[in-house]
Length: 116
Image 1 (cartoon, rainbow, N blue to C red):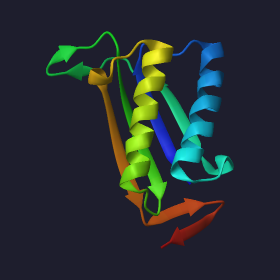
Image 2 (cartoon, helix red, strand yellow):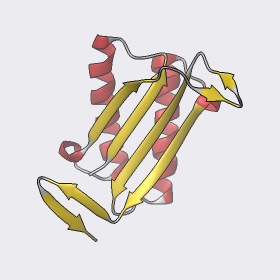
Image 3 (cartoon, helix red, strand yellow):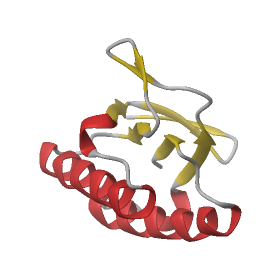
């Protein structure tokens, strides 16, 4: 049950957003060994992002929360995929992308509380 929050500058065009959702969901499901049907993706437009006090014209912050634990290898592969994907689709350099990972032992899903 991963939750991925993706904030970017520039943003995906409306049509591109649906393709990005499909691409990111499919790939991260495989990388994290989670069913596609349980991945929630939140694509947000960032009003502004700053790095080192300077405003970025392109950049991204990505949060990935996973129920249970993702291996370091899975996180490494996910990080590479995200950076490569954002470089290809939005021309965002890896130097302007931060990815944060959260392994969660507790989760709410389908109205139930789940704990490891």
